[in-house]
View 1 (cartoon, rainbow, N blue to C red):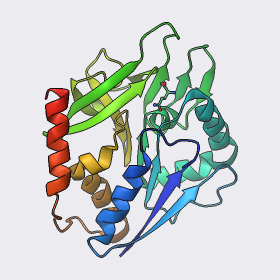
View 2 (tube, helix red, strand yellow):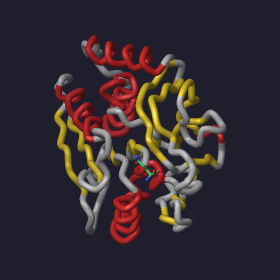
View 3 (tube, helix red, strand yellow):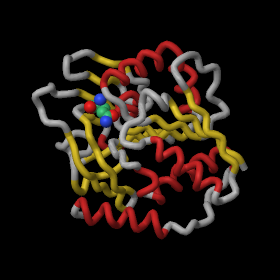
View 4 (tube, rainbow, N blue to C red):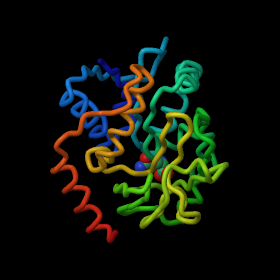
Length: 242
Ligand code: GLN
């Protein structure tokens, strides 16, 4: 088996070690004897996304996000939307999450278009309002996810049922309604940096499982020795008070 991982805008959108998520998925495949190709996807034309199994995009500051938003519309919108409707697995973090929703209205009121893969929109309430910063713990499918968040934008879901997780501690989507992240089809949006996947191996395997199921009909993954990852996860829970 072989998986192709696309890393969208690795130079523009890479805050707080979001690249660690790509490395984590790559390693967890190789440890299981699954071949992996990681492809950087940069500004400019994207002819086809049909060969991609997973697509990752990290966070970025507003300036980088503006460039990414423009390029998404000029060069990638149609191709990515059709791959997403076909079940492409996407992990979009923070600024990337905002761009996979409907729009991001920045602190000046300017609106960046999202690609509408998730039923969510984001509004920055103004430069004088505090950012949402700190460790986060959420509850996802009966277990905890841990991470770190730092965002000015507040994200609101069109339908609360599309939340990825519930906030246990931290802000999550907007610090008001207890939701964190969003999911539609195989698209996962979240504010958790961290790196997210090395510290949450169950979530990493969940994403790999969705990709392997789509491509090969495989639904179970052989377990790995996650002692180190679980210790990091545990430590984060302790630090964040969960
Ligand atoms: N620019 C966005 C915000 O502040 C995203 C920040 C990020 O990706 N860390 O809301």
